[in-house]
Length: 347
Image 1 (cartoon, helix red, strand yellow):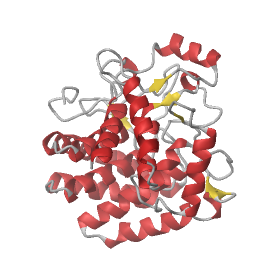
Image 2 (cartoon, rainbow, N blue to C red):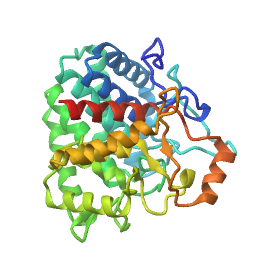
Image 3 (cartoon, helix red, strand yellow):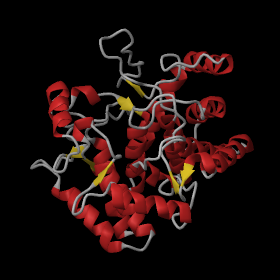
């Protein structure tokens, strides 16, 4: 994996200045894909980079938990979703455009991916164990704090997909650490996810009070398994995603009304949708998603973050291109999800 640094960091993109950071979520998906493909060494390097980075910021965890207890949570005091590739905290505070950086799902994603790595035979050494326990301690108190969603939008809400990431991370980390406390907390969060606040008309919604469905809700069953793929509420959610977000012959949008790069189709969501198709016995649908993804690759074989064939807002597509340039290509998370879907179709 040529994008990975010598220290183990994985950038979101190697060719887009805005994305040259190590997001705990993006990198953990990449590590999961590497582990599935039998590349345990670079996956381990990622997890050790995360562990070293987080342990170096242990004082920040204490500051964040103090804010939770005092009721003074802000996005500046809580733990960040991304770090520079040399393990420093990215800081846009006071800049002309401050970049949201408080997302609890990232820490759930890392615990989930780390536990998967260990269950596949990776060694849970002292560094990884200490960092995992630190993150568990953080999520036990802050895991359901209102925050930005996985798309770095809609602050101040308790997002269904974020709760699912936290629940899966606590459940699986508790299992490999031999600690029942996070496992019991995970059970409480799953009960909350499946309760009336996070469902509407028999389907999951993105957060309480919002009637929309979001592509990230696919993660509730795959990979997080907080509900089964055959769960009736989950099936209804997938139906909504198919009817409202799946572009005929194309990919999957994040949500209706999305304006980031025009509200385009996301490679990573198309791959996740293909994975769900397989869980529901629809091999043809999964192969359609894989074919569409592979057609989106550029001549160098690089996959973008989004495909702008059927945008929701051409005006906002032009706005983001002026602001940040072309969509991030390659996006490593897109490549990870392509590899996962291709592997699932074979195995």
